[in-house]
Image (cartoon, rainbow, N blue to C red; front, side):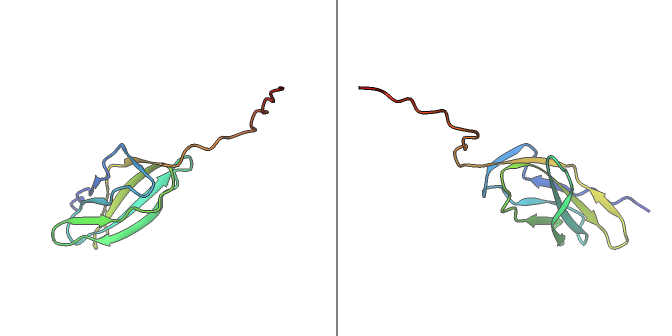
Length: 117
C-alpha cells in the first residue's frame, strides 16, 4: 500500500506569537477527499486534544478557525485520514498566545511609608 502524503499546516507559521483573540486561522493542504483533524496541546501536560475536523475538498485545502485560546504556548498538528485507513501526520507547529492586559502583581504589597509633617 502506498503511504498517504503528509498534510501541511501552513498557517499559523511555526513560532507565531499572537495576542489573545488574534491567532490566525489554521490553514493547510492535504490530499483531496481525506478527513483532517486538527489537534492542539498546551504545556506543561502536552496532552493532545482535538480542535476540529474537516473533509478536504477538490482543491486540497482546509481551514479551521482558531479562537478562544487563553495565553500560553501551544503545539498544533494535523492528521489526515483516508477512507482506506491510511493516515499521515503534519509537522508540529509551535504558537504562542500572549495576554494584552498588563501583568498582575503577585505577592504582598510592600507597606506604605508615612511621612510626618
